[in-house]
Amino acid sequence: MFLREITNRYIWEKFLESVEEKTFLQSWYWGEFQKRMGNEIWRVGIYRNKEELIAISLVIKIKAKRGTFLFLPHGPVVFKKEDLEAVLGFLVKELKIIAQDQKCSFIRVSPICERNAKNIKIFEQVGFREAPIHMHPEVTWELDISPSEEELLAQMRKTTRYLIRQGLKNQEIQIYQSHKLEDIDIFYNIHQEVVKRQKFIPFSLDYLKKEFEIFSQDNQISIFLGKYRNEILASAIIVYWQGIGFYHHGATSLKYPKVPISYLLQWEAIREAKKRGCGLYNFWGIAPDGSSKKHPWWGLTLFKKGFGGYKKEYVKTQDLVLNPRYWFNWIIEKIRKKKRGL
Image (cartoon, rainbow, N blue to C red; front, side, top):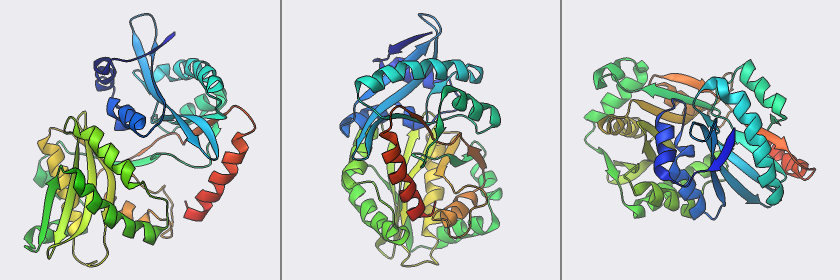
């Protein structure tokens, strides 16, 4: 095997078009966004020979007060599942060299492979251990949106379908789509209400605006805004990439809890995905099975599942310890996870 840094966007995106299991966290623009945020990145390709590209991965250097590490978001992306073990073993050897040069205390991977005994064992054999926290969704909810709108409505939970139709009848509710950077401020303000309710550390306004600017270059992102009685009460940021719509950020005010504005907004985002030719809608993260009503994502999970679809579970976030400084990070992240009730 050979490792080569990929600098050509076409080669990168073309490879991703050929694989089924992927998210925009490995897209070319996510790498550009990371650079805009001040992070150093590597786009690496693993070749079986000089020409056959069999896997890729975006690698991000994360510098935090608790330590510096290399991070692979929803990677590596492997063309054939049977190559995962060989690719991972080879990739780790190469990343250790980069990590040592960059003074990193560990390598963290949020895998994009199915959670099963075989894949878990592959990571264990390479030397990984389960991370104290997740970085990106490990359990997601997805919906095949290739059927007609009527078929999609028919397969929803009865309550969800009813609320969408009630929303469509309510002339005081308006849902509109925006591509204006300044409307990120509206989303952010509503999102602050969610932060206060659920007590978590949010993405900064700068983070959201830079993400929007990067993905706007090819019209791959939209802001949806839900208005009731001339007041915006709900918003969502949707990424449309390679035939998939991703519900990446969402926020809803509880000022009028009986008004189904969030249901209608989500339905309009799905309809837009269909218009763009997407065959899949990814609702992003949900709570793990067996979570109690006290879990911060319990209500959101119930909301997402109401639209119909199926669950995807990935191997949990994995850490490869490189030096003792890792354990300082481990303690801090364990405490944060407990505080959030995750």
